[in-house]
Image (cartoon, rainbow, N blue to C red; front, top):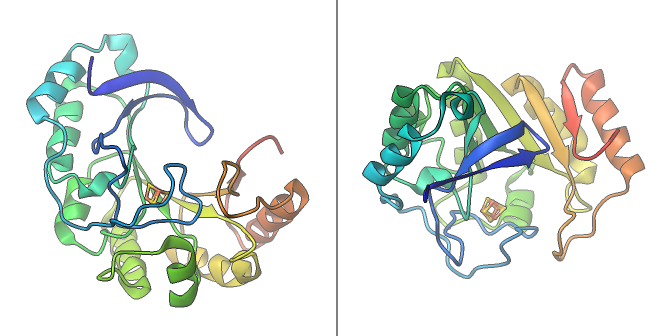
Length: 236
Ligand code: SF4
């Protein structure tokens, strides 16, 4: 199989197979997050185009065994999955092949686009990034394409929440730059009512120092106090 690999272990969803709908090096993303594991890139893009071949993916997913199809299939990779214009087609192929659970990980930047939301409408789990509590923090942490504003990201997340019937989960990367915005982030979480909030801190080499375990657990407790269900990366 060329377009599907695994199983791999994800701290967020456990054992899964992975599809990288971008499959590019360097990364192709609408953001250039300061903590990105792929490193920094001067090139950010929001232009949607086909990246991997739908027919090749279809062949690969058809060859998964019934047992393999019971393991979640995650769309996540070397950039932003929703930049892939055929993402909806890939999801449909996976569904038609009988994959039990389909997961899409997104940086939320294109969720304001109706066609993007349509592409992922039928997946079981959407894990959407929300690191910033305002435009200034968004620019500082996520360094978006010039056409992506913080208000666009928020309106996309709300539109997603409103129409989506699956499990919408938020992913917050907490660091020195946004730890003092936790209360505001909590308020945003309350407005979006995610099914789960994933909390992590940069651990790979980046210009951001990771927060201590104690700070992370305290942050989790504060979010839990306002009604969020929280999973912190690493052991609690
Ligand atoms: S959204 Fe993901 S891939 Fe894109 S820059 Fe941020 S961390 Fe890297």
